[in-house]
Length: 242
Ligand SMILES: [Zn+2]
Ligand SMILES: [Zn+2]
Image (cartoon, rainbow, N blue to C red):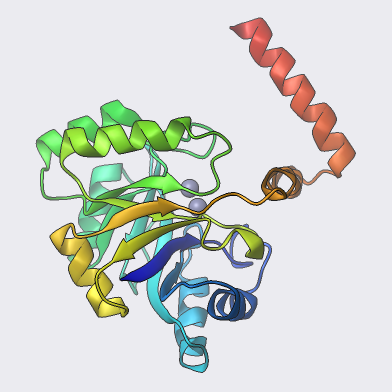
């Protein structure tokens, strides 16, 4: 069995680690066999990773996380840029045209642009062979709810389920992963196409929530103390609206 983490961010988008650091960490601190650097709307991280991959004991597949109008779409095995801001269906079609595999990222992560159940049900009904899978384990989600809902939906829609970390920090690489028969990138591709993949979630280490908070702080451009206050404020605002 091989292990793959196909959703990792580098400094080419909002990740904290460089591509070099990611490759080094993944090949020395994890059991992963294959990874994809999938930065937001740029292939530069993936291109850099492909250039450097031969120096590390890990295989790299090219990928990008595309911002569509309805949510984030992982485009795997793609080496040409794909425009952001198109519809989810048109983006997935473009991925297929380029020989890639389109996978719905974190469908139930509302904060991070998941497409949601209704969108996926509609697409699967109208375009049954368009999507290659659903990310049913996203290792960066703070609660298990989104992953559980995604797992239910994948069975309902009959789509393969993959597991990824969506790591923005080195320590989170491999937090979610996909099991597949084989060890190589080409075996991974064959397994994805045949639906012979299984998602898995690594047990969380105690520092996971601290890292998640740090990431939130970085995203908002705030110090940690500010973040705690902001979070409290967010919660109050949400409560009032509910
Ligand atoms: Zn995303
Ligand atoms: Zn992501």
